Image (cartoon, rainbow, N blue to C red; front, side, top):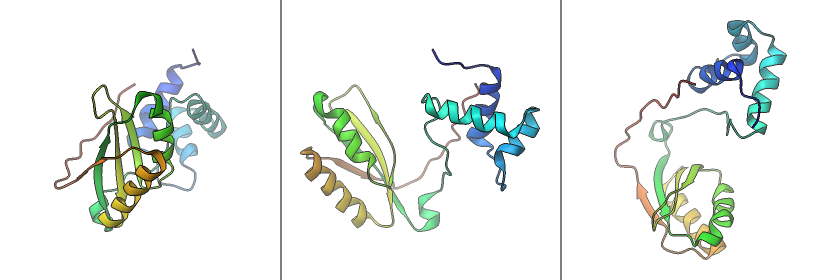
Amino acid sequence: MPRFDNLDKEILNRIQSDFPVTSRPFLAIATDLGVTEDVVIERVAYLKQTGIIRRIGGNFVPGKIGFVSTLCAAKVPEDRVDAFAQVVNQFPGVTHNYQRDDDLNIWFTFIAPSMTDIETHLKAISEMTGVTGILNMPAIHLYKIKAHFDI
């Protein structure tokens, strides 16, 4: 099992909901935690390399920047799940995807400038993977909750 100590936990708690918007965010975090900037950068790199951190990036409300979003679901044969996910992940509007134990076993969210763009991308995904019938469930109302996991 990879190293995962209290400093790693403190860094994760800080970056998931309160990432500093500054030219040197890791320095700000380091100062708050009483360590050096290099230590924070090394720890974050390690946590990303080991898969504990999936990504660091901003979250935006699509409609407020003129975009649309949708939730998609697909029935993907078990032996093609990884290949399907790799294709889906190639599209820049896909924020995340996950596998579920159900007939519709792969779910992903898509954000794009228009629903036409999303539909075009979903058609391309179908053509590239041979998976047809991808459900497109556009967001009608946005219900955002703060997903912060106190580590």
